[in-house]
Length: 293
Image (cartoon, rainbow, N blue to C red; front, side, top):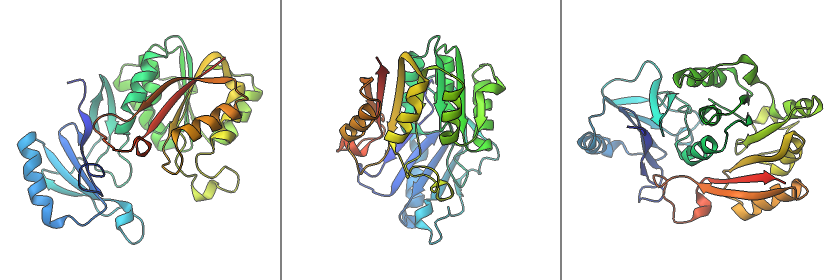
């Protein structure tokens, strides 16, 4: 299989708000914001009829707990994995941790972005901002990028990014894994004269509390675009992720184009895959690639 990680049930649009079920190789992850204790046995039985999962685990969403922390992860069938699980996404291999209390290491709804990046990175210098575990940069490297630079504020995800490069037999150049504040890195990179042929811009929906004094609150694309424009070479692309549901794709795109002084034009639009169905397209992950004129 060239795809072993995907959403099985997207409850928000499939009749069970607050419930999702994802496949990570031979492990199924049931994540819930609602009390489903009386249904877990039936859910596990149904899952095992579909696939011989080695493990089925349940994780309560952090907002389900009064102190906003994840509840204990529970093995409903088999055992909790004790090491990262390697999954395949369109032929690329990634280390994931569905059994961890926090994020799993791979955003399943970004599959279309990884595919687009892989197809549009040949011989390009790619900058992957807010890189997390580096799946987008791995896609660029697999697509023949001349160089890839990951920037993230946390060391542990960048260590996973290195491992993801190794899993795909891609070179690990330590100069391409930078731990630091994106908002501080970009002005320094601009001052040094750095240029890129592709930049991935996937900021978190909201800036962590500790950073809000010096950084824009949330996905302030105007501020970010003004910082990255000096780094974009002619005909370079800028791939933006729009997560927030309080603004439309059109509004985000206008903000980006205006912040670039109309030097960017829309090249491609994408969204999360069919395993993330939504009646309203503005409730899905929205992806837009811009090209600099």
